[in-house]
Image 1 (cartoon, rainbow, N blue to C red):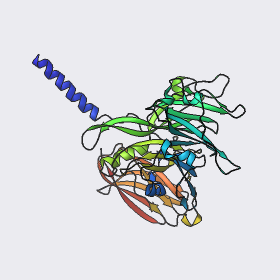
Image 2 (cartoon, helix red, strand yellow):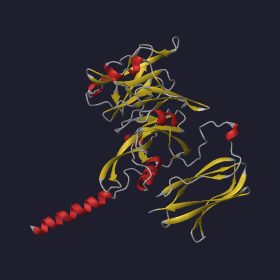
Image 3 (cartoon, helix red, strand yellow):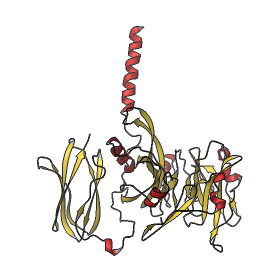
Image 4 (cartoon, rainbow, N blue to C red):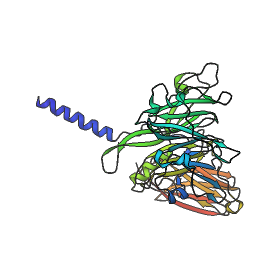
Length: 420
């Protein structure tokens, strides 16, 4: 009997050890996003803000309960509260979801029946938001009846188009559509679902905090849970931003759902967190622009929840993506630049960004601390502008390395550290 209990203890010990060291739930996505930065005007004035939702062009952002800010050539405007009927503090409005054209706003609001969704339409004549309206039982009471549950208020989602709404209640995704001719909503149904005689292709996603879909319905961004060991050695739940790639032409269930990957944003956050820089690692409520190049989301990297923005650098096919943010001519590059790698230290990958003022023949190499070239990362004639390159530590030992950029305009170096 004593031997039996000893074996049980040994099994539990090794199981716990393996569990604590298990890798992320999902592999790293092939697409690469830039280092996320907080939207300063929100961070400076509304610490604790979250739940971003953005219009199609990415220039009008709704968040919190409920505020709006707009981006111009000079940056984001000071956020302002929406009219009283939408921001009544006694009704606790929150989790705004704006349509791509910016003319219909959904949000969650407290009622005597619990948390329910409401919406308001933009009145072009009055240049303001119209009355707050309930979408009715087809939307607020989906087939599980969770729309009026006292504890379920995860009504965060996005519009596929100006009349098609997806949203989450208690972690399950639903879809509904507005018919302007009859002024009625379809009965909300859980994804996946295929509507008869319709081009809709249903999905089914179970997530934690929010969901966003590109207009072509090929990519779905959401927040997924992951358990891991934190710096204090304890086992905690974590939330990562993830992406699922879909093939609308594939009618099989697996093809529709595709494969889920963790975004490099989460892996970068992991690296910085364990290096003692980021204080926490919660990421949720993604909101993607119509062109798929800009991602807004809520995170608490610096210890308080706020809204971050990141730009797509490399797409899922490995192709560089042009900068989606318009820059005035005065900010165009006038000299070569080699930015700090992000993340650094890194494992397993990091992203290198360098800028060329003119068309140039370049060589970007990686050297060890003994001065030996171990890899040629990029070589040849390249166009002016900003370039992004993903570097992997595969085949390299842990340690310090030097990036060496050679151009006709001069040479630059940066130190990076690989930790395995």
